Image (cartoon, rainbow, N blue to C red):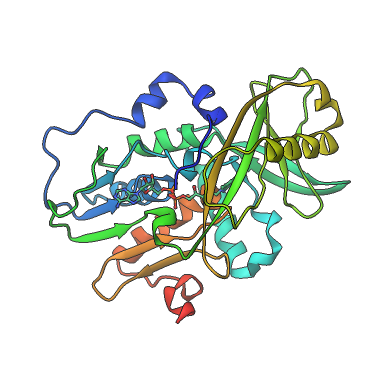
Length: 311
Ligand SMILES: Cc1cc2nc3c(=O)[nH]c(=O)nc-3n(C[C@H](O)[C@H](O)[C@H](O)COP(=O)(O)OP(=O)(O)OC[C@H]3O[C@@H](n4cnc5c(N)ncnc54)[C@H](O)[C@@H]3O)c2cc1C
């Protein structure tokens, strides 16, 4: 479930980073890695980077380009304090994840306040370019094999399935738009009162706005009337944006579980399943990587994210 339309990130990311997301095939990938990560979205890449940093030999197998699905099409908001419905345990991990984002130095994280319309201020949230983040992770993720799906060729110590929507019970389509560069400086992320819509300005001046929640539509196409709705919302949230052109419109699918919390679990055969990050996978990727790497070194995984909660 990839989505359709051209995300703004394709035009906001350097050629070197875009190249890192679609590397040439490795000469001969090691057939017996310690860790085989299936899925090169933001979650798989973060797990691969965390395991590589602990000295494990890692191979990532991605059937398309890295971050070609939801991960390269998200809004890039990192807002641990904007999801009260997710509960206190989730919040603790989300805060830890933002700390990990801020502690690295190979992709830019911009710290910003979030204004929930009309005027509630949530301090110290942040934003990233998800493709720049994915490229940085890819450079530290071990051996990467893109446009590849055959995992039978590997005999790995452990396999981690980070295949996004492929392993969740639901997907929820969303539309996003981006505008031409604006002279105005928003200086904060703005969200609607119900947190359903977010407007984020990029360093280039463009404003990204979205994302709708369309659980009943599994057709990836961009719908004109929905784009108009997002644009209207943008002007409500940022009135000075009324004269900006919409230059990018695109869709993607959130991987969703019934309670909207992720699954980070180990199956009976020893493999890991790490998915279901719904609308916060870019935020939560660093902590997901840390939790899986810790578990491979013997730590317990948090029960709150166990797949057993659905049985
Ligand atoms: C409109 C919208 C806005 C969003 N905004 C934000 C935001 O502002 N902040 C935030 O934190 N999150 C946001 N999200 C959520 C975020 O996009 C997701 O939570 C995150 O991208 C999920 O990452 P993932 O790696 O699990 O999945 P994916 O990105 O889907 O990656 C899974 C990868 O696995 C590959 N794959 C699947 N099966 C196989 C196989 N058999 N073999 C090999 N490869 C395989 C796929 O090709 C894909 O590349 C948003 C989502 C939407 C839809």
